[in-house]
Structure formats: C-alpha cells, structure tokens
Image 1: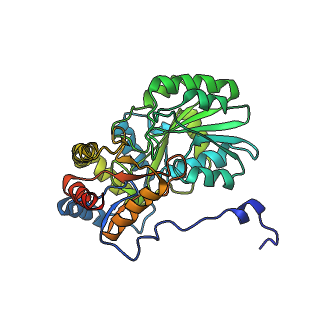
Image 2: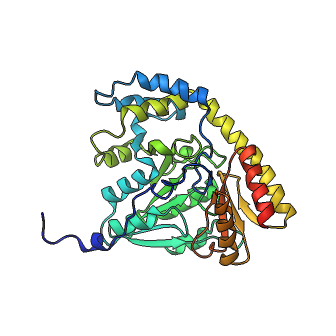
Image 3: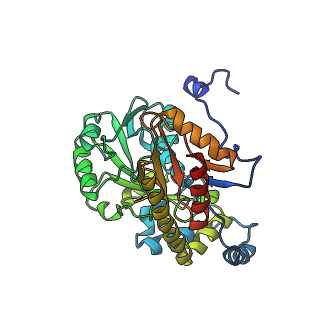
Length: 356
C-alpha cells in the first residue's frame, strides 16, 4: 500500500448512502422524491415471475437493456451509455474529460453529489442561482463561464426549486458555450413528469448531453440504473471509461419489465399530479406560498424563517411523516414534499392541519 495518499481525497468527507431509515421502515416518506408507495402486489408478482427466469449464474447481456431503451426513446443504442443512476453519469463525465484546475457549473442548492464529485476530481465548483421569482437566470450563468469551464450541469427541473429551463434557453446557452469549448449537460432525472424533452436538441448542438434515470418517474430508485444520451462519437468516447458490465441481470430485466408495462408508470404519475391539486389547494387556503409540482414530483413550501421550517419538519417526523428541510440558503426557510397518491397526501394534509 502506498505510504502517501492523495491529499484531496483524505479531506473529502463521504457518508454511506441509505442508512438513516434502517431503524424505522414504516412511515410516510416524502423526503427523497422517490415513488412514495410500493408497486401493487400483482405488478410485483409479475415482475417476480420474470426475475425467477434470470440466469444469475451467467454474466449479463447488457445489450438487451440498450436495445430496450433505444426502442422506447427512439434513439440509436449507439447514442446511449448505461450508468449507475445519474450520479454514475456525472462521475463518468468528470473522470473522462475534466482536468485538474477546470471548473464546473451547477445550481445552488441542487443534487448533493455535484460538489462532492468536484472535490473528488479536483475541479472548481461554481454555482448559479435563480431570479427572485424562482426562474432560471441565464445571464447570471453566462457570466460565470470561462475558458476553464469543462461542464455546465443543468438540472431541468432542479431541486428544491424547479427553475424550469426552456428548450430555447438551452439552445442559446449551448451556442454560447461553444466559445469556451464547454459541454452543456442536461440533468433530466425527472423525465417524464412534465418537463421538456431535450433529445431533439442533441443533433442541433455538438456540445450537448442528456442524463436520465429510472429512479424518479419509474419509481426504481432501488436498482440504480441511469443513462447518458448524446451523439454517437461522444458516447463512444465516454464509454471507454465504463466498467466491465454497466448493469446486472436482475436490474436489466426489471427495467425492461417496466418499459414494457409503462402504463403502470404513467398511472402513478397521473395519481401524483391529481394529488398535487389537493395539496396546492390546501396551501392556498392557508395562504402559504409554494412552488413546483409542474415538471417534477415535489413541491417546495416557503416559511418565514429556517426555524419555522425546521419546526414543521420535526413535528411531522414525530407523526412518522418525513419531508425534507435543511436546504442551504436561500432555500433554508422552507421544506420540500415528494408527491404521492391521494390517500398519502390526505394523511399529510391532516397532519399539517394539526401542526399549523
């Protein structure tokens, strides 16, 4: 073992994922933008029968998954790279192309792993915000791009503020980034909850990539499958750093099953959209401001102070209802709620009635 280890990695703090729920399995979890209820028994039974036929003693046939996604999206399989969720796509991009001393841009706050990967690969993290009415601030973002900007990561929508970005704005930014040889990466993890589809822009812009996942709309956060979409030559390049097998037999069959049974996914999305109307109506009656629920599966709820927000989060937790607070400024004075079907949202509303 080497005596001297990389200083920047020694300073990097990482916690194991998925440990905070281990003691309490029951409850209403509306804090991580997952599917909030299990799949119906009949769906899981059908999936179980399919998984029984998996030959787990053999190495996986990953091409089957490429073909399934290709046919579903109507995109050539040569334009797709399977990754470990969107987090795997981010890591793949940085380890393949970013150099020490480069910088990357992403919103603040946003998905927690953007700054973590920046530290991991020794690139400067630069964040941009949103306007006072929570809109995407294109001009502010442009002002932070320079010759050392390797990637601009655009979550569309972002979290906790959706901050939706139009296809026209994306095109304008991609054209602008050509001056600095910067790649624009759309993070469309909430596809297909309602946001615009960036795939048609790939052929128009040579410096555009798209990251997606089966964690949110498909409700498959537990299997950790995502994918990167781009031009064939770019995907070929980024694929050179992939692992031996991009996924495993059980995950491949699970994704294929839900692509083939997409109506189950769409039904759940419809349920969440309908229940958002109930939740928004409740907050309107209480004269409480909120944003979101248009391109994503979450709402962000404003409070007057961080203390008020944290108090509500804590009181809901006492009722075994989990929403997410603790966001960094300027959104530390609110909390986010993951969408759910009507029964679960009515449970939340009832609890909020008591607390408020």
